[in-house]
Image (cartoon, rainbow, N blue to C red):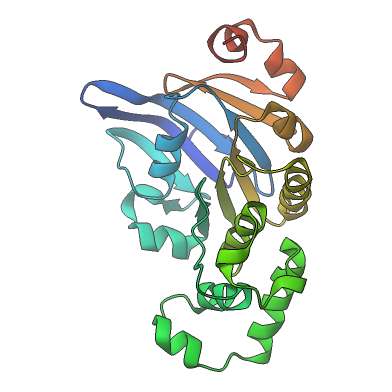
Length: 249
């Protein structure tokens, strides 16, 4: 690893090809402990492929991916990567709609326990305390008995983030969290992610530039599988290359 030590995530020289198309092209990207990094870029820039590599869904043709200084992500299965401390939230929320908010969080806490065994088991006081803490963090304490299917879109997104938090990941990968949200939901989501930064490292992929500006100190722009710009939002928006390939479209 060539980057300075004490990074949470190291991606170096990653290349992924699909039928001759390079989804990632010698990608280099680093995330600091506790950092909230936003990644933007046009469709096909490699954002999803990058997250697929980090989580073990896709294996690169070449390059390295380390979680901290010692964990080689390319040697781990998807389940092992989750156990190592990486959680991923997809764009479409995947909560259990026939279970209550509380039961969704309880099931996420259970890890490898079976579904029925989890719902029949008694949780410990410490586990109940953790669920209550997460309910407060995601703003759903008043909805703990509500079924997942009756939640608003934004509430389902927050519940899924809460389900990830039950595993206490060190790194959260969040894909387009505010797509389809109301302005109020977007504001709450920004507050939620900002409250999690510091204790967790967070990588957010998003197209909503107003939202990105509201949460990110550092923005990374991908195009054709490479980083073409990095910096604060003002610096990125003034970059001629970024305007050409993304913001000017």
